[in-house]
Each structure stands twice: as C-alpha cells, then as structure tokens.
Image (tube, rainbow, N blue to C red; front, top):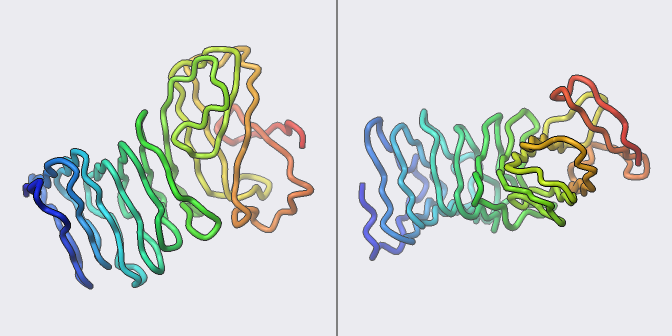
Length: 234
C-alpha cells in the first residue's frame, strides 16, 4: 500500500484499524502522517516508513495497539491520546522519535522497543510514561568514546568516562529486580568494559519508586545479568 506524498492523514475511528497481511508492504512516501483514532496496527507483513509519522489518538481504553507477527518499523511514532494509552503486542523499531505527547502509558507487555543508533524518546513525564512491569525493554545503541554526560536514546542513563567504551548498548526495563527495587533498571553492554571508572546518573520517576523511600535508596550493580547484586552505596 503506497501512501502518496500528498496524503495528510488517514483516520480510523472506533475500528480494528490497519491490517498488513503476510507478504504485503505498507510503504510511506516521505513525511506523511498516518493517524489512527482509537485504532491499532496489526502487521504480519512489512512497514517501510521513510520519514513518516504514525500517530495514535483518541481516548478509549484498549483500542490503540501495535500487534502482529512481524516487527513493526517506524520513523516517528507518536502517542497523542486524550486518555488511556498505547499497548504493544509485538516488538517495534523507532529510528527517529518516539513521542509521548498525550495519554497515560505506553505499555511494553513483555515486548521491546529498539531505537538503534538514531532513535530517541521524547515527552516522558510522571503521568505519561513507558511501563513494563511484566517485562520488555527499550534499547538504544551509541558509540561512547570518552563520553561526557551522554544519555543514549534519552533513556535516562547518563554516563561520563575518560575511556572509550566503543559501541554501547543501553537497555531500560521496568520489572522489579531481586530485593524489591524501584520499577526501573538498566543493562549496559559496552565494547570495552575495562577500567572505565565511569560516573553515571540513574534517572527514575516518582511513580517508579515501588513504595520505596528515596531516603533509603542505594545503588546496586550486577555483572551476571541480575543473578547477584553488589551494593555500590547511596
């Protein structure tokens, strides 16, 4: 399906939404906007997004979603609902901006968002955020050579180091870790992981405290994917 460059928006009102069947392609020409009003996308085929923007609008619960057997690729993806949120029922890729402009949460539902080396998160607040208490993560990749206050993908993990980490993967998840952590953790995988002596800032939202008192928060690290944790101090 070819979206002509003259197309302003496609509107779907109170419907199942857009279905891309197996073997089919949705091809966007340029920076067109596709608006799904209380509707979702089910992709069993291929989305070729160019520089388009997919906008999920409306107010009804459970009507805005991305589903299907294929990973859906977006350039810009915007959640701009007046109430309720957006449900992930498949993995997605966002190569430019994932914007949380309206609504409450983007629910991971144990699925993943890949930003690659160019995508970024915008507009997250206490009342409008990404959540994934049952699993799933957001991932960004950046080349960090002697980084200063680098925040890959705007995911909230800020790092400085005099060393070259090289290509570094930053994953952010929201499942509670062993010992009753806040509802946020980060997995950091640098190419070079030797003598980094890095300074990091671990950002979180008040709504992610998981009933923990900020006065008693400590920073923990793990080198075995969360099996064992080391207390790094306050």
